[in-house]
Amino acid sequence: MADEALNDLFASAWPEHRPRAFGAVLRRSLAWVCAFRGPRLVGFVNVAWDGERHAFLLDPTVHPDVRRRGVGLRLVQAAARAAREAGAEWLHVDYAHDLEPFYRRAGFRPTAAGLLDLRERGGGK
Image (tube, rainbow, N blue to C red; front, side):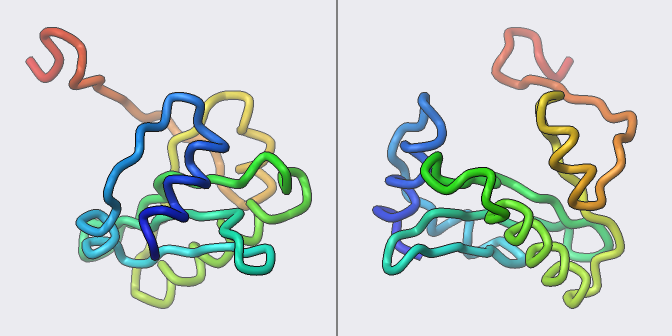
C-alpha cells in the first residue's frame, strides 16, 4: 500500500491527520483491507493482533464521498474474516459513542474497557 494513497485518504477523513509513513505499521499487521473506486483508495482498515487470539481494528477510514454506502461495513466484515482465518478468536475495536449503531450492525457488542492516554502528563503511573 502506497503512503501517498493512505495519506490522501486519511487527510480527507481525519482533519488533524499529518502525513506519515505506514510501512512499519503495515509490516507488523495481521492484515489490512482496502476499498477502491476505480484506482482511488476510498476505504481502509488495519488489523493488528497479539500473535494469538486477539485482533484489533485500527484506523477504519472511509472517504467522506462514499460514506453511508456500505463501504465501511464491507471493510469491517472482510477484516473479521481475515482475523478469523488467521486463528484469532476475538476482534476488538474502540469507537466514539456516535459510531455504536454502525459497529452493532457489524456484529460488535459494547464491553467495559479502559483507556489510558499516554500523551497526558502523568499517564502510565
